[in-house]
Image 1 (cartoon, rainbow, N blue to C red):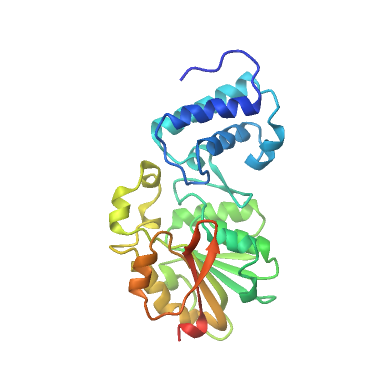
Image 2: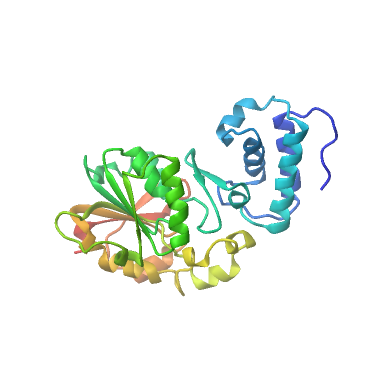
Length: 298
């Protein structure tokens, strides 16, 4: 890939240039950026040590030759490897918050993040309440929850020790090591036995839920992520069955569990026709994230 000519380029002009290269490379988006221009903004903002949102206020800034060449190197790597950009840059942004990112865990992303930030889940979180992020991965949802509700205690667990290592780095980055506690283990086995003093007011979970047929058809960017964090069995519901079966033991009397299921709406309805579900509105629609109240699981 050739470097830009030695002419002055503004950030806005270079975003256009990078976006054109990405668009011709048949890449797949959805790991923190929705299209080629969003990724182009992300690539060059990293060279400026700004967030993508902050970079939008600097569109007229003239870029240095070093910034241009460094960005073009990232573009070349993105096209040749088909790895998610977050892995290449070592960083992802979720709801405007930065997180370390590596191939030890999936790229930070979840529609549950929208519900945390817009306050939709606060009715289930009393002051001094307890929350759990089940299948926490990189820790991003647990961190967003702790930042949004600084008076609660958050537990976060995952079966993957490498993913928890990333989560620990992110906790340190946001100085949340005392508010968020990490646990390692297979779903509920990671946690202490439930009793009256340690049940959760809110459980959030973005579990592996991709059905087997969809897993086989995923673009290369998704296959760069740990399959353990994506694959949900034949109908995508293998782990969700285990999660829902034991959730009542870990929820407080007026608690609730929030589960992301992505594109598996029909599979979920077929697997759990008897459970009253509240479908939560997110930017992708109202069939991707559900809430079940504790009283409807007992």
